[in-house]
Length: 297
Image (cartoon, rainbow, N blue to C red; front, top):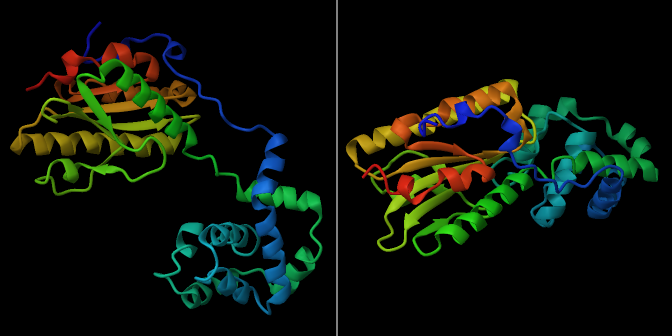
């Protein structure tokens, strides 16, 4: 089997993917989310009751005196209940974007305060369950990816602890920029992990981890371009600063079984004369080897 195009010769994709299951199922998740957001929902109802306009509700939510975690929960509720065009990423930037600017730009989309007061004056428990579910819908986004990365780190350290180190955040955390590893590299190039030889700390590979529960269509197309760009940037840098750099794309999950996603993985695997490898957890032992890591000197 060709090492450069290893993935394309796999006939049963299901045999190489790793199902990671840590999601709380319905209806159990309703109680979990209500416990998490119940207090914020009560605060949201009180803010509506005590405010004279929908804009005032937003002003009071975005107060710097309010705890950040509480403020984020309330902003999610504001988006769901008052103005869906106000994305949370924008509204959370209380130091960079003034509330007055948001009101001026999007105020015409706000649900009237009279209607809000009528709807939230005595919110039924079943509505609280529903609102908690809406607000917490994406709370576990990224968690499966963190678990995938942690499992890969555990495997790597068990197999290579005497020869190589692996560094990077196991969960949520700041990515490693390639410019931190190579000062001559001037572009943005965030990596999930870096592999080094222990004896001299020579950088041998950088990696990117992604767990796909499901994926296809435009999402897969977007990633195809992003991964190809990572390879191209690494090749260009290696052209004027010789390195031993290899690229590891740790990609796993049922989403790989989508034909477009699998094709993208197969096309990516083996690029740059074999310096690029796409692996799943089940393929790591066969594909991430000392021979490969030490090659391309």
